Image (cartoon, rainbow, N blue to C red):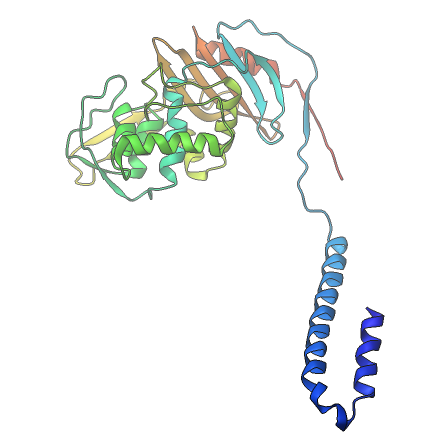
Length: 315
């Protein structure tokens, strides 16, 4: 850099009238040199700024069980995961695929929240959906927000299909988007064939992917608030039909449980994805193909209640 500056100074000092034809060349060299010096100085400023700033990356506390406990559960697969650190505290067949049943609706909700606003009005285009429903009628109009409550509390399959039907391209495009989100979230052992979780032969997930999906879902304030609700009264936009709906999660409000979604089909058995607050930390519990999803979850809660040390790691 110093040599470049001396060359410029020399050229300017020795400039005389006979050299007038060299003026354009000298000016070009001068402009290029100024640009180089400017870039050099910007790099120096950037380097100094980076090294003078304090480290701001958050380091999450690391959870460890005080005592290892092996619970007796009927579930064929289960997992306990600390939400913030993503540390797994207990597993049973964590990478085996099972039908997630209505816990599919966690992804349905996340996918729909990317497109619809809570006050958007959606129309019931067809009926006749099997399983758990609230009894929506063809042509009935509901806000997207009320349909979310219907889908996530009493696990209404008809609400899930109304949401998907009103997506551009209909149910097929909506399900494609759900699967695209699974890949975007790096949940490669998760797949959906419908928005309600009825197709056991096409819907599958592993316990670890369901736990990670729940972790993502709980970061959404709207979804997090809905799944923590025990009861809600909703109605169509014309106020002709009113529905009082209740959350199917029997553990909600007990043991620090504040979410997230139930599921059941004959093929899937009992499924439950649970979020629980323990000492200010959120734990996610998943049970799949369970004979008693609530009892199994209670036993897993006993594994972690008062049994976790959090190691604080500071840079």
